[in-house]
Length: 229
Image (cartoon, rainbow, N blue to C red; front, top):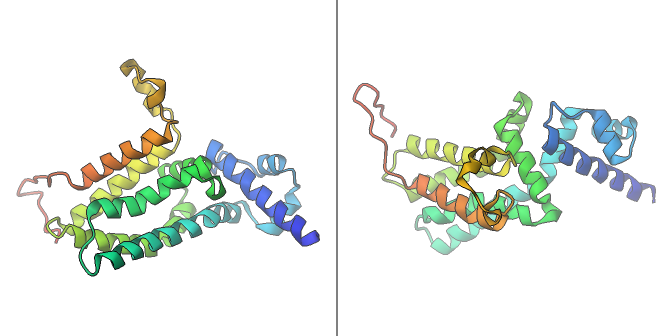
């Protein structure tokens, strides 16, 4: 019974931290807020996690472990079915970004709360979080990068890397839950097209990402051109 209560306490702390980090950011969330929301004392947080930094890492790790495994599983299946042929860019974009976006509909995986936390963190990361996420994503990033290189052999590798960077930025901004879209309210966006409509956000974002990946190559002046291959 004691062990069950300990697991329950740990999960309540993680759930509370996830919600509060999403709402206020890492720097804007205090340990007092987390303990109050979770209904525990500071000793319980220190016992399970040791520090606020370790708690933040564990909030991400419990979601990213599944996400990374699922992304790799999807990529492995697609490559097996392709039987050695390059994948289509649309398959790769869906495998990486689509898998993430579909998490929003699964509350067991954190739902929109975790997606907005991830989006917020990627747009305003602390140095230790940036290093942590880079480590957690490295294997998956490398596999998807190589798949994109094979899929788009006519596109310089440096251009693919930059476009993937832009895609990460667009996705992070879209899922961060910011009010930026409301800055253009003069455009009279209807309720069914609001930022909270995940069923419309996902196809819109996926279409945008794929369009960016397939966009015409930029033209550089001779003085600025570099060999990116």
